[in-house]
Image (cartoon, rainbow, N blue to C red):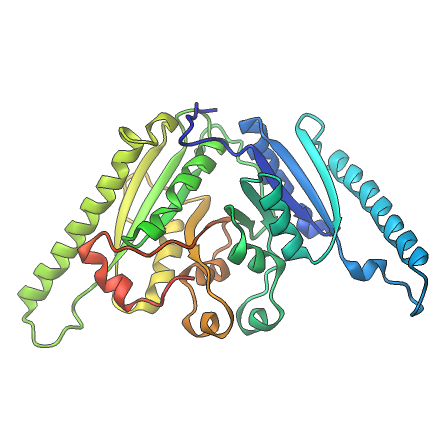
Length: 347
C-alpha cells in the first residue's frame, strides 16, 4: 500500500449499510478490499425498519413492542454474524452495529457521529420517473451524505489480477466544485492498487463552436483549438498535483483527455464513453470506477434541473464514487464557461 501523509489519509472507517438482503451484501467485497489494504475498520450497519417492531394487533402494550424490538435486534445480530462468516471477514477489523430507524437518515446520522470517512453501498437500481417518487436508499444517502459514497451498481469482483492496475476516471468541468472529487478518488485508487500501480484519468469536455452564427469557418476552428488548448493546459496543471504536488506521495499514474460536445445532452454520453476507453490516450484501457462531485438540491427544482452526476449514476454500470460538496462553483477556466454557463447545473 502506498504511504499516505496527513493531507491524503487512507480510508480508516468504512461503512457498509445492510438491510438483510443479498443485494445489499454485494457491496461488502469492495469495502473489504479497501479496509484490507488501508488497515481500516469495516463497519457493518444493519438498519432495522420500525415496521418490523410493530405488533400485528393494534393497541398492544409497550412491553409487547419492546419484546418485538428485542427479537428484531437478536435476529439482526445473528444475521450479522452469518455475514461475517460468509464473506470471510475474520482477518479484518470488523465492527457490527444494529439500529432501528429509517434507512437513509440512520445511515447519514451514523456516518456523522462515528467518524466514518467512506460509505460503500449497493444501489437497488431505481431509475427515471419512478425514482423521483419512490426514491432509493442509495439515492438519498448520496444526496445528503457528509462523506464520499461509493455506490456499487453490479456485483463487484475483487481486482486481483497482477497485470491490471485499478483506474478511476474523474470527470471535471473546470470548477473547484468538480475538483473536490480528485482527492477522494486518489485515496480510493491508492487503497485498491499495489504501490505505484494505481491510475487516475482526468477528463473534461469543451463545446464545439460550429453552431455559432455569423462566424467564418476559420474563426470557429481557431476558437475550438484555443478552447481545447486551454482545457489541456488546465488538466496538465491538475496532473502536476500527482507528480510534484500534494498527491505525489501516492505514486499514481495520471492520464488526461479533452472531449468535445455540441449539445449539453451529449456530456453524460462522453463521460461514459471515456470510462469505457473510447479516447485517444495511448495505453488507456478503460476505467474501473468513475468519480464525480455532486451538489445538494431538493424537491421539484432537482427534478427540473437534473444532474450530470445522477444521469451518470443511471447510465453507468461501473462503481461510482460520489463526493458531496456545498461550496460555490467557482469558474477556474475561461474555456469552460461554455460548459458551466450552458450546462444543466450540477446537484
